[in-house]
Image (cartoon, rainbow, N blue to C red):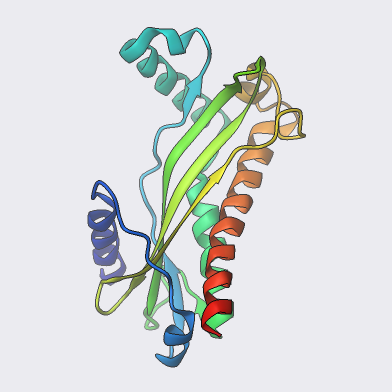
Length: 210
């Protein structure tokens, strides 16, 4: 029940139009004796599958993009990249603090810090200079929440777009059908890059404070 309540708090915080970036003070957290870090779970947002044709039709085009993205996600049984991002960030933070990562059914041990990651943009989209070449654009926001006071301790964000002609690009059909696991491989790649970007922000804070 406690984690469910904290999840509601996290949703309320991120529901604001904007949240001012806040540095996560790792030295202060270390002194406070953090023992456990956990993650939240959010409803999976819609993947937008954007093609040049659909992009021309405004609202109706947007509905078609969402419908196509939903079909791709369901047919290929893929997860929201935020799940992997939050897990990797929780592991990074726990390691930095000498704590452990726990799951929601961990028993008596309750989290001291909650890692909440929200996917903000999740698109299968073409490159403007090569309409037949597609990849995943991904943006997310992370919040680190004190489990006792329910306050935001720090925030971070990421923005990932693979380079054109990299191994993370292919045709629309390849992504839609997940040929050679291109969709799942690319989603894993953007999630790792996102976690690395936010983790780098945390490392920079740790270096400054240390």
